Length: 59
Image 1 (cartoon, helix red, strand yellow):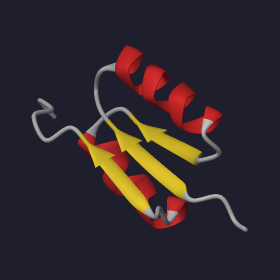
Image 2 (cartoon, rainbow, N blue to C red; image 1 turned 90 degrees about the horizontal axis):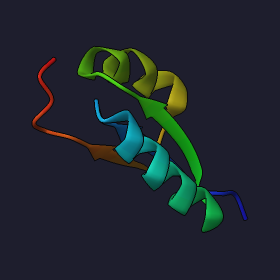
Image 3 (tube, helix red, strand yellow; image 1 turned 90 degrees about the vertical axis):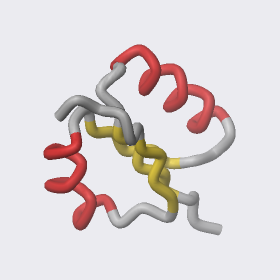
């Protein structure tokens, strides 16, 4: 079975690292972006099954 891909978009680098570590230990594939702009640029290439998004990012 293919691993499910989760795309994490958040400007808090420590939060992203922590969530990514937890998810990867539970057999998920993760991709990360640290700004809304970067997230929009990468979303088509990442093709995630789920997006975790910080809706209160400044940029």
